[in-house]
Length: 279
Image (cartoon, rainbow, N blue to C red):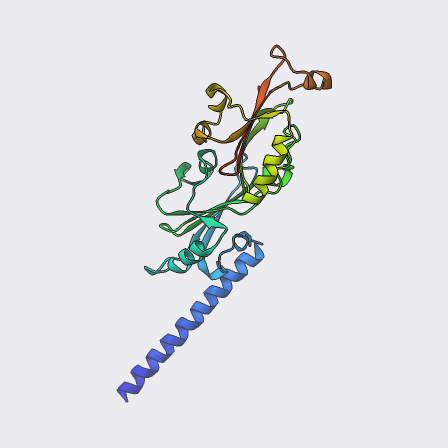
């Protein structure tokens, strides 16, 4: 009789645990459904609602868009293994980190203090329209998309080069004021096939040259020192005049220049580095 009671007790406890677990999953799904939060599903890894412990959404003005940090459930030592396997197999994620001007955007805020991202075991998202970092060590997913991706037309008219068909793109854009002064700093990665087309375009473009620019110009690419070591490249440099006078824009001289535009195309790596500044 006593054994039957023990078995019945164990059975009831198991049933209660199953019910509580099901309710927890259901409530989590309902929460994210009501809040319309499905951004993590856009990143090509199998994260479900029940994998998420909580989500923090930041709305700081400087981000001017979406920035979220998802804390994933990591109750067991191998909880992150399934995600690690997916990250390793995905062609949208790899271990090559973003440049520092992107990395500085990733952090958390706790008690009014900024906590930098832990950089020990990270995977980086290389899809279009968003930046994301998966932190395996701390079981966190960082998701960042701002106005640049929504408003920026990816075509550099002044370079006479179509940049829309890229594998990956990194953007650092700081503009402001009535004249829209500031800085643009972009890095594009292209396929080898597209790279051949770009070389043909640059060969026919008189604004581009194989003659290497001086170091004082190339050092503007402060986050991409590899530009200084390019062996086989094309170079572009133009003064910029921020004005409404179309004649001055087309005939910029050193005396009326407000800045400059620099571009370098690395033939061996199929990478375009672009820098624009006006003050």
